Image 1: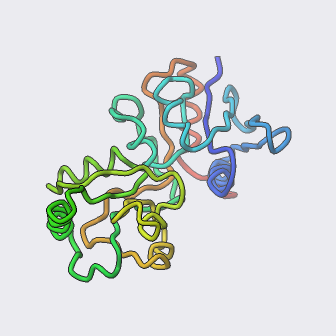
Image 2: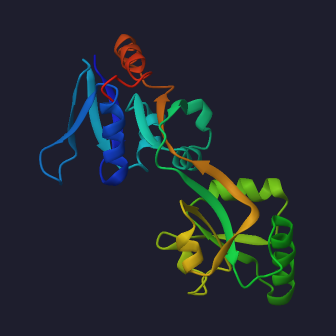
Amino acid sequence: MSIKLGVPSKGRLMDKTFAWFARRGITLARTGSAREYAGAVEGVEGVELVLLSAGEIPRELAAGRIHLGVTGTDLVRERLPRWEAAVEEVRPMGFGHADLVLAVPAAWVDVNTLDDLDAVAAQFRARHGLRLRIATKYHRLVRDFLRTAGVADYQLVDSQGATEGTIKNETAEAIADITSTGETLRANHLKVLDDGLVLRSQATLWKSRVASGNGAVLAALLDRLETPSPAG
């Protein structure tokens, strides 16, 4: 019985994942047309490549439909309520780095910490009778983070587009979003709170805790992945 390896189906994340495996003597390749999600694996027997969106991989791991998967820390922790019971981190892969952060308008010169944000949220509620809106795609992570920090009087609003633009569009007063360099935040006149780091994320290889399959093949593959090949 083969095991299934899920990797991102397009973009830089796919390219870097393919290169990471290649340095360990395993060739991953997309087959067929650009519209087809078919792939092949060379260099190790009994492994089937499954091409998925990065956002689908946590769900497929948790359901046991794939044995290994490459996706971001942020997606696993956001999309799997009890992620530790569903998946096991095999190893971080050293690329796809991004931080989930809380940011507010740069014009809020007196708001630099979570305590400041909590005070502003209380003032906003008293003045407008409404909760301060924070736009994000990461509801679970942000809610848990703010609860731990003791921030109240806010509401999370869903953002499926350009989260940084929600403040300019007056659909939110603050945001929580992924950033790599901070350039997009600065371009939209936003600043990260001094203690506003919610999570550091990067591409990571995960193993399903519930998938059944060929344990010998899985062990052999994981052993191969421990050390880059001399040619790498």
